[in-house]
Length: 412
Image (cartoon, rainbow, N blue to C red; front, side, top):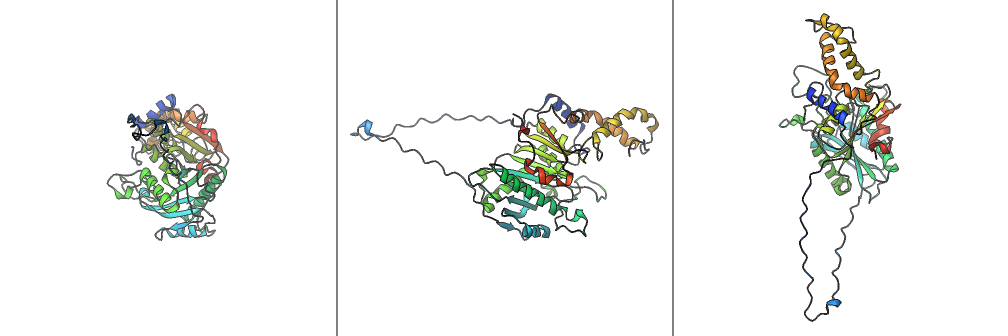
């Protein structure tokens, strides 16, 4: 697994692998490699014993074995199980939540020992299986406090994002035959990386779901978190593990896309779909796709992009595809005057000679992905692009769990 703190997220070798994958495709998203296992031959069954004097034709056939009882969910209405050690904002949120759904708030070691929210919407059908949605929030959404007009949005935005997600999950439950449940981990916010040197107050948590062996500060790990959550669903909320689908939906809003990339890089086969909600920035969605294809994980990578929004690689906010291509095209013109002057501005945006050359050299590693994005990945079966007018801040309410996405995005 490539460390999350590596420059540009992945090495040039891995990025070049992406080119080959885009050319050859990585198969349909439901094609997951399975290790074949030998099935032992059934042992011969002894003939039923018959008394010496009994008429063979009068012997009653053996009684059929009773069928096992079907698992069913027994979720208590409006259950609230809130840890007293949860952050005050989450406790206040739980008290204010107007829903008959079941809510659990506590700490999970798989999320680095941090607060995690589990929610089961009202209207559970006891005999139906559950689809689990794991939602990774974006920047500042670890800040959960009741919205206030007098406070900056970043100090309370987590309340709004969590409410949007719960509302979307509740609507999803009402519109689909299968049940749905939510796992909503809270990030560490701003967290320095193991190899970071010097002072900084700007680095958002790029280590989410990227464990560092032997370092307790970075113990986040997707599969342990998933297993611990399933234990809580069963032991605290009445949902047997056997009723939860083995493969889940993992989605990230905004900077939550970092966690999705890290989850895919871990090689887990327990994700059926990665949904990037305005989160497909450079190295995040393309890095996730690389990991999915390289390790044959059989997951669909879905990109929800606001037209011209912050995650549009050709939009106005961060047109990284256009920027890299332009840097490559113009570098030969600037190279002679940049000789020995790495800090000199070249006139292409804010690029210096040094960064201009770096982006020009990086372009071949991204060219195939960016060219495919010009046609919204129409010829790539492992990626689905959905463009929308829904603004960045409202996307959790509309697309959590694939709520407003076309059901045929998985293909035939």
